[in-house]
Length: 318
Image 1 (cartoon, rainbow, N blue to C red):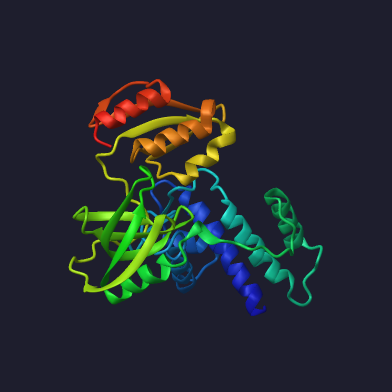
Image 2: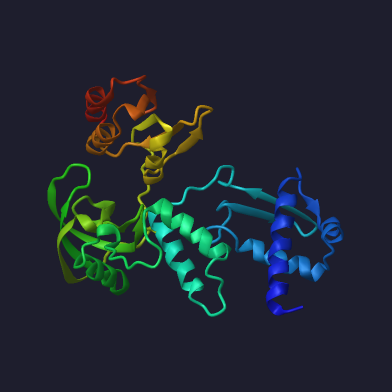
């Protein structure tokens, strides 16, 4: 058997094995697993090593596929795979581009399954397969990105003039960049902010001016991600989205998400400020229902949309 065929068989077997083990309450003995799938102990261990690297980088526990091995028994749990995962527009375009690079290889069937699948995906995205796209990724400030990124490596401070995402107000800040990355399709940085004397998160497309400083960073890095991490004290809003706008929830940091029987989606989202909340209500209109807002541990009931939401958020310290 060819190496390619052997690899394909191993992947197919591993996926089948993982699905079967995940369906067994309490896990499965390794000996039983070997007997059922015709594996040697060595093959089983190699398959398990592959499963350990399945999920979301950096492949820690509780990232889509969780595998437990006590030496004799194997158990597998799927975390976050209980519903179909949505394909965002950037992901779909990346998939089309990657797939088309494969269709250009010699001896590739131009009418094969891959080509047909890419054509369907391209049609859904409203693009023409093979066309050239001019993409401005994430709206990043081209001047800010290299300066902030270099500061994370050098361990130095950066001066920025920043327009607040929620308030729209401009401010001047000295920050110590810790982690630069993409969060919700936007270049972002988690940093220590000397103006706030606290850890803060900044969207780089909101940086109006930037200047590298020679001053060494003074605070130890406590962040490992560029993603916004909502503080626990923020108000939480329970929203119900109509099915045709359920995509909006993919752009938010949802604490909870539930698909209802009628196709609508109920989510619980942290509210970082009234500006974002009011814009969201205005954009989605009657297709979003605000069930309640909880602030400081108190359920404030069902607010009357934007006007009441503004008063609640101001009252509880946006």
